[in-house]
Each structure stands twice: as C-alpha cells, then as structure tokens.
Length: 181
Image (cartoon, rainbow, N blue to C red; front, side):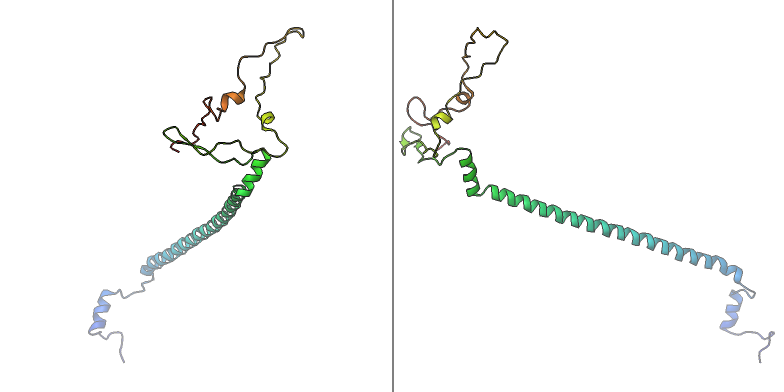
C-alpha cells in the first residue's frame, strides 16, 4: 500500500509539481463565471437573432400579400383598359358622340395630284351634320346696357371656325392629313 510519504514517479511526479497540492476551488471560480457569462450571452444573442428573423418573416409575409393585392388591382385595371379600347367599345362610344364611319380616303401626292375620290362621310340616322356642326354666333355678354339699346355682334369668329381648319381649301383640293402620303 502506498502511504502519504511515498514519492510519485514519472509522469505523476511532473504533474504534481505543476498543479498545486491544495484545494483549488478558488482558481476555478473565475473560469466557471466566464463560461456561464459566455453561455448566457450566447443565449441572449440567439434570442435576439431569432426575434429579428421572426420580425423579418412577418414583414415579408405582409409585403407578399400587398404585392398580390396590387397585382390583382393592376390586372383588373388592365382588363378595364382592354375592354374600353376594344373595337366594338370604341365604335359604340363614337356613335354615342354622333360620329359616323368615314368614306373612302383621298390622298395628295407630292406632285399635287389627288389619288382617290374624296367624299363626305355618311350621316348617322336622325342627325343633320349641317345643323349639328354649324357655327353658332358668339354670345354677347350683358354689360348692363338698357333694354332699348342693341348690342352689335362682335367681329370675332366662332370657336369652331378658329380651331378646326376646313378639310377642303378654297381651291377645291383636299389638304393632306398625314405628311408624306
């Protein structure tokens, strides 16, 4: 049996020289405290990271829903535009405005000759273009003159005459509608 007075040999002797012989709980306290702090800090960092990822996930879900709603709205608006620009819808709206299909076109060549036979567009049933588009005399604003005085009509042409040039000039040759044709 080995007693307390017996010497250690070899490897055990060298370890005994390096390690202190007494109770070493005082040397372990800072190490244990460091390990506990590192584990606690790691857990707190993990919790913060997890909550940030959850918040990002909720925001991503909301943005996806908003994108879906906006895409649906854009498609509905595009459908409305397509319906309103369809040929049958344009024709219906033009007829409501009193427009009629045009006749055969005439083209002015660069040398001044006319190709085609220009003609007036057919009128819509129940309308008279001469009455519908006839220039209206300008309204004379009341300036407070007495009822017995007559106001002279202004020499200013009507709005229709100002803004819409005649399609056929005085020479009888139609004006070109598009350049180069």
